[in-house]
Image 1: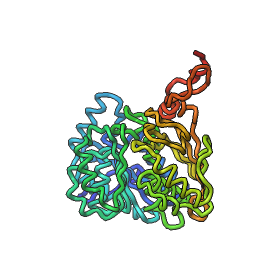
Image 2 (image 1 turned 120 degrees about the vertical axis):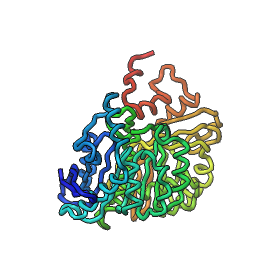
Image 3 (image 1 turned 180 degrees about the vertical axis):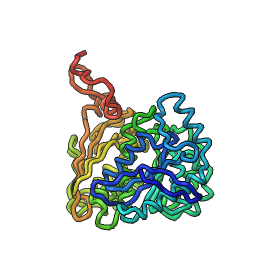
Image 4 (image 1 turned 90 degrees about the horizontal axis):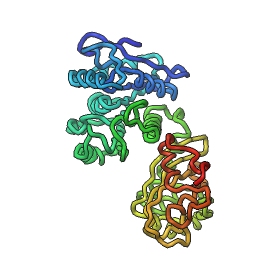
Length: 407
């Protein structure tokens, strides 16, 4: 623990984590309504292991110092809500700002200081960003941000927001207000997590989703690495991840062949391993992307990230690829007329970089699963699966060894 003087008198404690290297950029970790509990300390450790000096202030100190609530019982929730309702949020923001100032003075902190918050802390991270200018801020499923959007004009630092699609504390009208007010701001990045509920990143929580949590945490880390780490110290992997995201955007969002090719070296190649589609060199890839790939992507195509491993010159990206087979798809189902079937299949991309651009892509998926789902391949007598292979990736607790048990 470190002790921090409050701006309006008194003092409070903050849980401090220093990275293994001893120094790094600072991070103010802003708590949920459960206080500085085990989960908050786990988050602090996670960021410290990745090079940040983390301080998690006790924001309930004026009501009850040292609050730690598990949140597993009804009594826990009632106590947490009572503390939340009794919190003076303006003073809590000042305490967060005092923590930020203390980190800037701490000998382990190399200079830049960001903020990350969850639930209550998600809103506080936003308010800290518009009132006290951390170097960057991230909010997970912040509660009540829509009620403070008039302060967005004061935003002067990069801001990242993670929003859960089923969050009862941030209903559709609130999400729409946030997107409308912040979506056009170049300093703001917003990720929506369809199907996820409030607290999806809280390990052990009722709505914890390991897949959504992993990708949200990866996005947060990359965001902080880009904005807080000094030039030259930001990881090579973080820059590769940015290049890959740009490439995917041009393929699936803007659907722009020429911009896609600009992300690639001249002799790049793409190989869709199961069906041997793709191309070698920019002229071949221009033909492939413009005629066989981008125009043959169904309108409801959806990519759900699962995991990402980043090396020095390579990325391994695991995702769910989902679509309705309403148009010809020569790149995945060559020679097959549209079946109208809904398909979801795990897909892995192994991407290698050279000279700051994509050099080649090896794309893998289970073609048998795709054919089963289209109805072109029967299951009888064959060790094959359909959509359940994707379901088990998303939920490892689903039964194993079903094919081994026989019919």
